[in-house]
Image 1: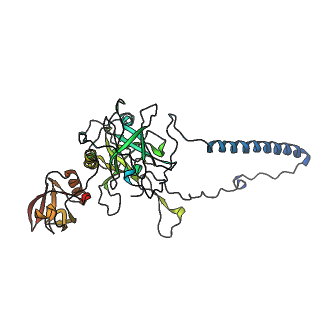
Image 2 (image 1 turned 90 degrees about the horizontal axis):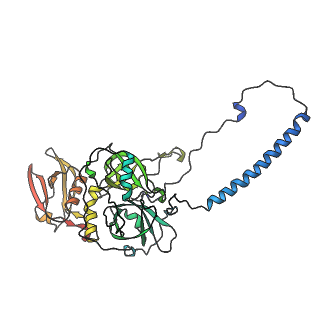
Length: 429
């Protein structure tokens, strides 16, 4: 979706306040008194007018001087972070991914989620545990003075970082900065690989001798609506190390209409430009999501005035860690992503009291067709798990990858039939 966290909130006129009554209408009536001689009040009135004029002139000079001073100031945090950066997408029609600073993949590196942790931590403890694993990400393009700023999560002691692809898109130089580094040293980073559709990117910088603290990855499958979560990142690009809190508002949200992507975590934790690629953390200090987008703007009914439009708030989206790990590990091993697929079209349906995915068509030449999967079959389980929804089936396919066989149970003519086959990579077609 285009509504990434690196874009500004839509601008628009605000609602004007109601008119303020004239001060005379708020005064209590006073008795009418006989007017005094002008000589008694003329001199004091002139003195007061002169004083007000003098003060007004001084105030005008001071305000204009202060405005000129502020206009020349770059906004930096107390530790000397980079100044406020631009979120205007550069016009680089000739850009291609080859322009990125590329690094080599390493098949020996693989990530996994940790088991469920113990009791919940305080917000202070969560922040202190996660902050050493968060980096500021800055990506620039030749010929452009602005930069994309975002956030990344350190996932290995050697310097691998998870972030969003849209931060580095149409750029050719990337740097990261550890938020725990008081010296604010910028480290050049290379791109190991990315998945544009899922908005994932894997970076690598030299972490030798830095004593990096890899983030603890938690199982996002264990999240439930109402669970407390925290977002850790760099909103606006210079408010580094900011943490906001909220809850899991919903699960398996689609980021686009008719999307074939993974379901996302919806959260009420405040997300802003610069939070892209940051960490969504559970109450045990484990990273369970990568903050990626938010739904913002104004919503109004037909013929409704702009002043009466409703502002969309507190709808942030994060990529579930457990769902993106198969793609991240594929990138770490090969430098490119994949898209495992059965090679079918299907839709959610119910048959013989069973919920599943009814096969509408099977592509020619795919292993599933050769193994006997037919049109009209109702897939009720995949690799031992029920698949009542499209999201459940996609999750099973993505986690299975391309190695080994994919095992399905289908309902055909009222009977359960097991079918096993290999998956195909749609990105290689």
